[in-house]
Figure 1 (cartoon, helix red, strand yellow):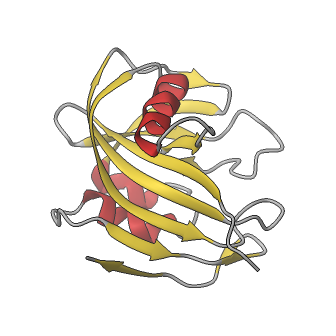
Figure 2: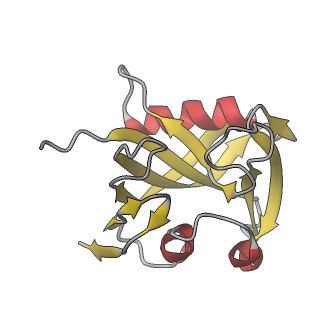
Length: 162
């Protein structure tokens, strides 16, 4: 069976002093698969855009700010992650420059600045705890991982760097 994932972006916006990360607390939609969890910002790539343009658009839509600088930190294949078992392929970005003032909330939940050192204490997908250190580490090489899910649970995690 061919691999035909939903292609998406996931971005982590750093505060100007790089000590905090803008996270969304998914607390606004009762039927949300992510309800109660904290996550980065992002979403599905549209047919006519590249992943960088998709990341910029998602940050503008979800946080109300314009990205001026970002780095691709990695890619993750999430087979079986979707609500109906769909496969996802995510491009993970670190946004270290923007203009504007972030919104306080959007239709998915409230936006909160969280100290980087406190990220691990938040309710989030268990799998996020495995790749988030790679998003913020000092290794300039992007990581490329696979994290299969089954029944809403992470099954394994492996990654490589080129």
